[in-house]
Image (cartoon, rainbow over all chains, first blue to last red; front, top):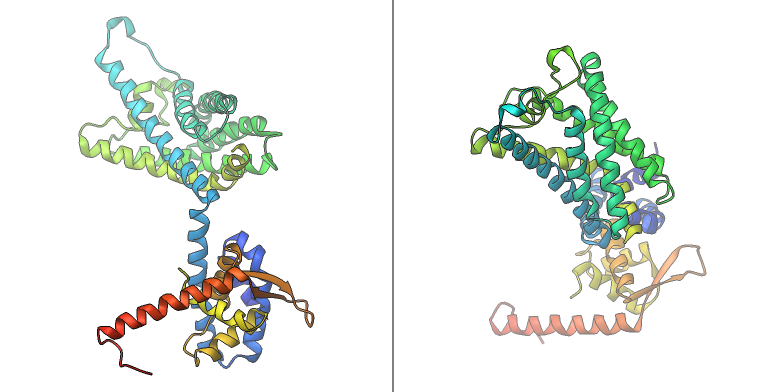
Length: 279
Length: 102
């Protein structure tokens, strides 16, 4: 590989917008510097590499401080807020179920779709705040809640056979398919956005299920009772935390916040593109 | 306020239009080799100066390369920055940080 190609590779550390604007000119300047400059060998490359990383850091910071960067930051915060809110809503629901327990409720079990709807509604709800129009917000919440409900219902059936991987893939595929239907005509390349979403949701679902297995509560959200497909709300929500003290509460909030951050980070690019159009 | 790299790029373009490597060479010569701009630092400064309207792009006749020239606003900004720096130096001199030079 010649040095010019190597420098072209080095240019990849800059934000895309900066690279598109000045990449060719920088490569030309590099060629001149390499051919006519006084520095050679290690001194030359240490100068070029340190300059590249210093300037790229500045450029990335400028991108994050720009309008697009602000949208991306808000999307990440919305995802984190959604997962933390889901944790809080689940905990509250579980606590209310226990506290207000009446023999009349004996034998009552909540199907996984209820849990899925809760996840979809809370996460979709905080994400929808990013949309400008009320109609778009409503569509996003409904799509998220319905697809997550269907996804969780199927995923728990599959999980008994495939384990966490199949569980995650089914949820991701279901949610992403619904998002693809909703996004068609609203953004360019909705299939690419849906694919990224599928990867994000699957990753978070699998990571969540593994984390749950190892959680302080020690309950597995993938556990199937009575050999059937039903999972009681206690198992599902308890798996995602039934805090017994403040430490467990904080660990629960922290782990769900990380899950939200992971989801947001994977989907930030298509989401920013969609939201920039919406605004 | 202009950064050091931005000020040097502006100073370089006050004399004539230049392309990227030309600016690099001129800045190095102007500062006696004290300031050496790499391509990243140079184009970061150029990008900011173009956005602020202090310099503008032009096409060199000799080559297809993009060149840059200082705008009227850029020349005024460079003058203001030089005055600000001169004022700082006077203040530092009053405090005995620098020896008096004629």
